Image 1: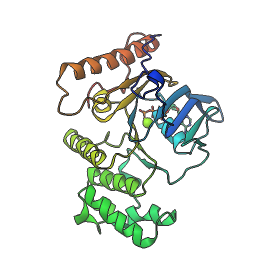
Image 2: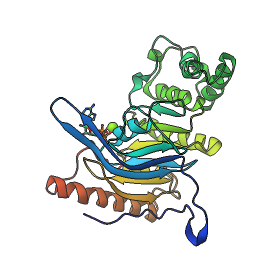
Image 3: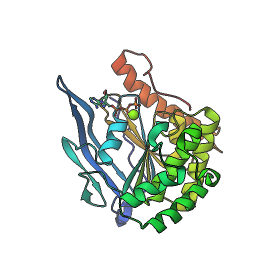
Image 4: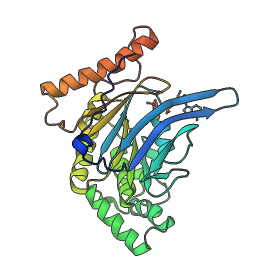
Length: 287
Ligand SMILES: Nc1ncnc2c1ncn2[C@@H]1O[C@H](COP(=O)(O)OP(=O)(O)OP(=O)(O)O)[C@@H](O)[C@H]1O
Ligand SMILES: [Mg+2]
């Protein structure tokens, strides 16, 4: 087992500076599914902290427990050991402070228009009045460049447009953290690139906090300020890596390529160890 656990980050704490309270604290969390026949351990003692305005990426091969971790942060699954806290309070149920964007394009309500889909959680959670919800929905629809489609129904939209609506819906709620489970994985390469750029532009404007799941090393480095590399099933932390300095613009530079290779080696070493020197399926070196 490699010992490349690089968790130095740049969060202070050196020379007596105070470490800020994490927005999300996932502490030694083991997550399991109990089926009739067996107990499946999805993650084992996973530990990480997400701070305000982090773009924190969970990266690992298929089946390592990325979606399970997101579900647990979302409050849909309780840890069998360890704990998950938002602003110091244990997560024990779903809440409007954690909005999820999924990989699937069919996450919108088909009988509601685009604008109604975005308003829906704001109104049903009573976080906003109907007037505020309408105003916020219009604002975020504009931010994802879909104002023209406000009255369209989801089935008339492309996959990328549906994902934009889902992102607008998530962000319009003003959650403490946006949870994104491979939201661009099913898109064609060009649309995926555009969506990544748009997400980064939105972040530049709003500095929201996002926990983003991917199995693309390239996407992780481009989108993430920090990357948590997970081992194959059951997911354990292999490393936590800073990726602040990388973007679409500098992905051909030596530093980007070196980091890509380093993460690849880290994941490949682990998967080779488990699978008998064969690359882990479902792990993309690039998008
Ligand atoms: N509802 C479930 N019941 C039982 N086992 C499950 C369930 N959901 C997931 N698992 C198992 O938990 C493990 C982690 O699954 P998870 O979906 O979190 O992986 P992942 O990292 O998101 O994979 P992918 O990249 O393919 O989406 C896998 O072994 C999976 O088979
Ligand atoms: Mg998944």
